Image (cartoon, rainbow, N blue to C red; front, top):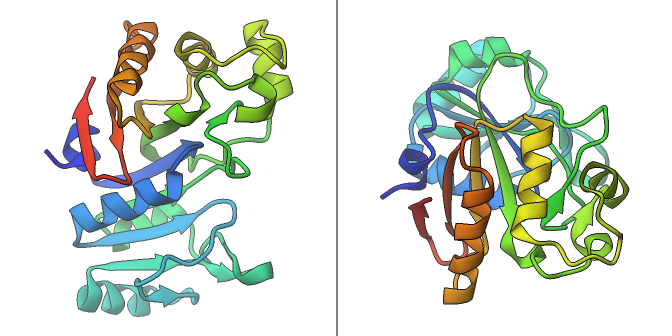
Length: 223
C-alpha cells in the first residue's frame, strides 16, 4: 500500500514536521501522488533533486509548469543554496496545485524533535500535519537524539542523559497536539517493530492516524 494512502494525505496543504526523514517523506509522497504536486517550505530547504524548480511568483507560470511536469518545487533563492518560502501565499498555491506538500520544520538532522514557541511554521489552512519521528532515536540519550532537547526534558521530566523510549517520544507529540498524522521512520528490524508497537500504544486514543516503516527500503504499514 502506498504511504500517501496509509497516511490519508488529502488534496490541499499538508505540513510535514518533526525529524528523522521529513525531506525523504516529501519525496516519497510526491512520487506517489505524481500529478498537481507542489513541494515547498515555510522554513529553509535545499531544492529537490530531479524536480523542476520555479522561483518566481507568476501563477500562470506555475500552472503551466505543473501541467508539463506534474510535480514541481517552489521557493525563493536564499543563502547557501537553500530555498525559502514561495513568493505566493500557500492559500493561493492551493488553488494552483492539487497537493501542496510543505516542509514546515527543522531538526538539525536529528531523529526527534520538540518545538520552541516559534516552531513549527505550519500554514494556517493545512488539512494534514504529518509528524515524522526517527526510530533511530530510541535508546539514545535525549541530549544526543532530540533537537530542542531542553524543551523535551521540560515537557517529559526526562534527564538529558535519559535514553529516549517510545513512550517519551509519544508524550511530546501528545502534549504539543500538532499532528493529525504520525509516521515512524527507520523501522526495519524485528526489534524496531516492537518499539513501533509501543510507540503506537502510547499514542492510542489521540485520533492520530499512524504508519511506520522504512523510507530507505520503501516498506510501510499502518499501526
